[in-house]
Image (tube, rainbow, N blue to C red; front, side, top):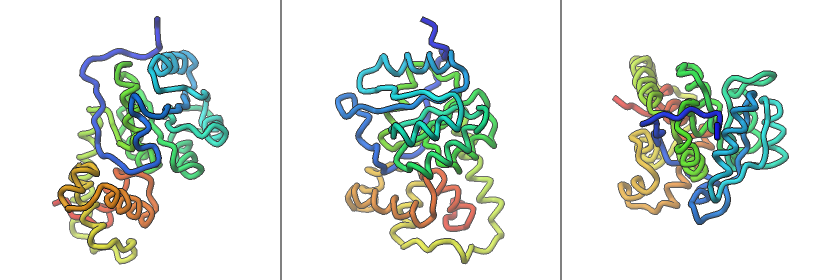
Length: 251
């Protein structure tokens, strides 16, 4: 059956960071059901994506939307765990919709879907609070894995875009190399700075806990405090902010 999705090889998304969040643990095959909202202005793509997701145990599509305005309304009405959100849509585009969704319901994870490899879209999505960014060419066999991972609190991007993200980190460091440390940046404790630095290295919560000889719950609390202090939504966004504001020096 034609799902409306493109099948490709070697398109497995890259896990960038693991985050502490309300959806953690909900993506296990034998765990609670992951509730998904599908948003795209093309009915055929929505139908195909819904077909792929509903064929998997532990995943249920609770609704669909054809534009960003409908997406925000559906999130408020249905409270999904994960939103699969197209970047380009009428009335309200995916980036703005993502920002409104995260403001209205921070617990909901957003995965942006795009046919474009535009750097600006990727960085805007991260700033808006997206937990994932996938090209629409991703293989259908990877879609459910992505939903499960994001619902656990991980952040994922398509492989070709992961390199661009790291390049942006490096560029931010270079652009701010001679700038004074921002005095207006929120103050983080020494331990929070340690945790943020390890997040920037790509370590997950378990690895950070082992490195610092603390519990994973303590790591989760530190990450949550960091995001609250910086008024940000995701670990990727926190690392980019920290480099830009000279809170972190990645060399």
